[in-house]
Amino acid sequence: MTLQSRGRKQQTPSMISRFPDLFKFRGVVSPRNHRFFHHRHPPPTPTPTMSDLRPPEHQVAGHRASASKLGPVVDGSGLFYKPLQAGDRGEHEVAFYEAFSTHPAVPPRIRDTFFPRFHGTRLLPTEARPGEPHPHLVLDDLLAGLEAPSVADIKIGAITWPPSSPEPYVAKCLAKDRGTTSVLLGFRVSGVRVVAPGGAVWSPERPELKALDTAGVRRVLRRYVSSVSGEGVDCALAAAVYGGEGGVLSQLLELKAWFEEQTLFHFYSASILLGYDANAVSSTGVGGGVRVKLVDFAHVAEGDGVIDHNFLGGLCSLIKFISDIVSETPEKPATGP
Picture (cartoon, rainbow, N blue to C red):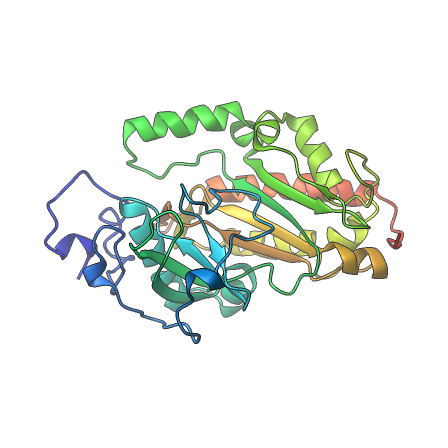
């Protein structure tokens, strides 16, 4: 049974209805109708209460949970709860996780290494809507276990809207893509947070990131692997974080190899999340739990046997930027403060 077969009045084509073959309805909870809620993959822990939940301390992009807005929360036990988006986008993202997590053509190595583990959906209390539980995706907290996470959120693709999107939405996305580096470079930096030795945090405001040009993007990617405070750039952590076995570059190249072959999905408006433990890297001079993950799948489309050139092009562009930083940086170990 598809999402359109639940007795809802037919509307303009939605993300789900455009892809009926891949994204089958499997008990997805709708933000507009909680009667259909159930767990397909029930999380192993009891449903958390309001006192158990808090906004992620290291969130760098997206809406932050507050009394006026829904946003992601974590429970401190390794789980990340993302509220389903309005309209069909939330349903579509759940449907993607359902399809992706069980698809036999997705290599287990790719699924386990580069994507959040999906634990199903839950109705949770929220500060923004007291007394009205809201459906959430339940995922692994991708930064759990990192003592001092340095994080970057990079939206991939020169085109960030899926096919057959309504014209007003296309116009909105196109204006944003043209106003940032998405069209020019095939990616844009949506958020970044760098922890320096001693605990100082560098995290530029979103308007500053939106205004970045090519030189600015290069500077931010260099600053992400620098060990100095403030606006300083020394790239002292580049070899440990970007380079070497298990570094960002090697992981991105592995991801690229999959995107050069996979034709199942087209990942519009998805992001690559980079993370590492700044304390571990600074003290040991080697990679501190470097993580490369794909996130945000509300606009994924079926691949229909065609390579996702939009995502692949942006990924190759990002790889070139990071490869250049690695090649120009002396391979000396990082040292602690």
